Image 1: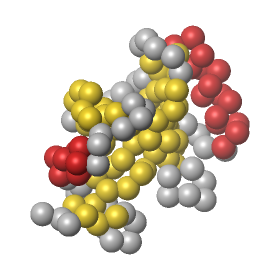
Image 2: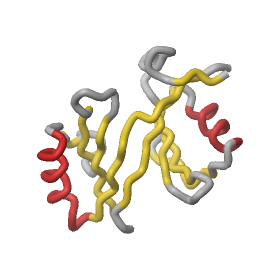
Image 3: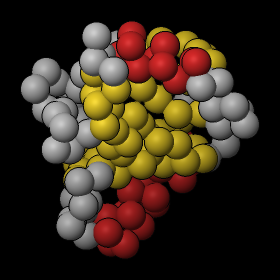
Length: 127
């Protein structure tokens, strides 16, 4: 069955000690409000002005600061399988989305998108 996906967010994973300073920096650098997500308080995010792309800052429990991409899709199972055929591997499922590694070992996430939000005008259609 056909599905849609697109790179939807740039995610900055920040060590806990740097998180508040990073939020203030990126609010000022982008002009985006970077509000706290009520369901996931370790996240602050916003759409980027002038782009159909979001910026998300995530407070890490452990590990070094890094950047990763979020791919949003209307069919997570189909998208994960497609990316695995391209060489990605699953790391773990978290709250309904998948953390994956690309062939070079870099992390990225596959995140379910609300039904109807992705279409041929704003996402890639995969058969």
